[in-house]
Length: 363
Image 1 (cartoon, rainbow, N blue to C red):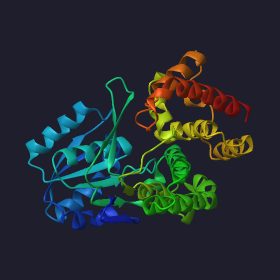
Image 2 (cartoon, helix red, strand yellow; image 1 turned 90 degrees about the vertical axis):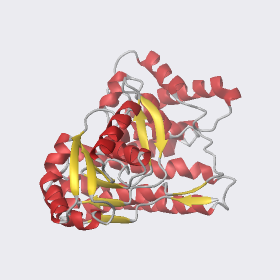
Image 3 (spheres, one colour; image 1 turned 180 degrees about the horizontal axis):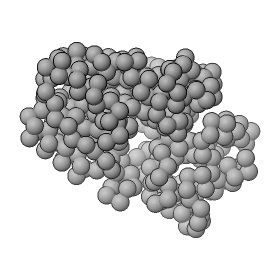
C-alpha cells in the first residue's frame, strides 16, 4: 500500500503574502497564528493586512523555544480557547513543526509560511519533538501535510545565509538516506519515485548551491537562490511524501545521528542541517563506502561551508566520552535494526563517529 502526503498548493513567489488572505480564506475564517517574534515582525504587517482584507479573523501567539509535548498541548489549548478553525505557522522549522502538531491534534488544516529555507518542515507531515532538556525525543507524524505553503522567496532570500546552508545540508542527505533502501526492493515504485526526486536534488545543488550561497542575503531573488529554496522546501519535502507502508528502514542514517547529537549540550546551538550533514559522513563510513567517496563528500561539504567535524558543531572537550554518548544515544529500534546486534552496532557507530571527526579535522 502506498500513501501520499503533500500540500494542496505550494506558492513560491515574491510578494505572495500580499494575497495570502485570498488563499487562506478557503480553509477557515479564524486562524491561530503561531510564530517566532522575529518571523512575525518580518511577515506580520503584510500577512495580517491580507487576512483582514479577506475577512479572516486571527489570534497571534508567539513561540520561542522547543517543540515539546507540553508546548503542543499549551498551544492546542490556545486554539480551542480562540475557537480557531485553522492554524497558521510562521517562521523556521520549530515554529512550523509546532503549528503542524497543534493542527493535527485539533483536526484543523494548517498553513505554513516559511521565513527561512533550513528544512522541509513547511511541507512535511511530521514534527520533531524535544525533551525539556533540549534533546530530541523523536518525531510525531501527522495525518496530513499542511494544506497550503506560502513561501515568499524574497523574504527567505534575505534571511541569514547560515540557514540556507543548513537547508542544503539537510537536503543533500535525502539521496544518501534513501539509496540503501533500494537494495532488494527495486520493485517499490514509491521508493523509486523518492530516489529520482532525491537525485534531482543533488543535480540542483551541484548546479546552484555555491552560487546561491554567494547571492543569498541580498534583496534580489536570483535563479540560483530560488532553485535552492525550491530544492530545500519542495523537492526535499516531496522525497518523503510517497511511502510504501511495508518499507522498513534498515540502517543507521544521518538523521538518527542528528537526534543523538542533541544529547550533547554544546551541539544544540548548531542547526538541524548542520548536524545532519555530519551524520551523513558517519553514515557513509558505517556503510563501508570507499575512502575516496567519503573524502569527496567531505570536500563538497567543506566548500559549502558546512561542518565536517565535532569541533565545528561546538563539541571541543571530553571527546571520547561524548562520542560514546552520541553512539549510545542512537535509537536502533527506530531505524529497524536487530536488537541482538545492538552492542556491536553501537560500537561500530562510535568508531564511525571517531573516524568521521578525524577525516573532517584533516580537511
